[in-house]
Amino acid sequence: MTTVKNILQSKSNEIWSTSPDTLVFDALKVMAEKNIGALLVMEADKLAGIFSERDYARKVALKGETSHNTVVRNVMTADVVSVAQDQPIEKCMTLMTDNHIRHLPVLEGDKLKGMISIGDVVKALISQHEDTIKQLENYITGKR
Image 1 (cartoon, rainbow, N blue to C red):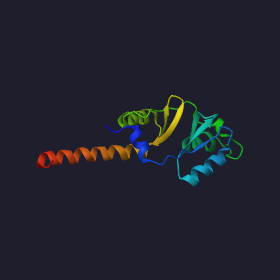
Image 2: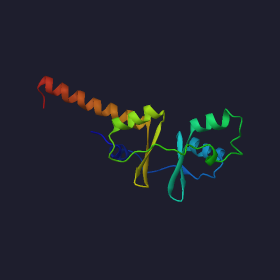
Image 3: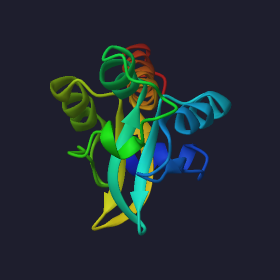
């Protein structure tokens, strides 16, 4: 069974974040530079929220606001769905699908351990299924 911890071990340890008082424009620049779809919003070393491309599109662009005059605090998602490292990836997929989200912060208590994306989960699920298929093929053909 693949867990969130397995995914985190295969990823870079870098966690990209911003503060709640950062201008949306500056947060978007970081996201573009790092080629990522979301930033964790940290305040005093605690997770305060998440700011995603979806937040920008729905809460800034579509409302006619400007990213140069809006701070992340005003448009971030504050009610963040998160997971623990021991969470199976199948549960993560369910959480992401049910909540219509693409990013899950990983917490142990209040301590941030990383973040996984829908792409990370899909990649891990595909790998897990490929391993199962290979084992079944070996079983059927008598290879061990």
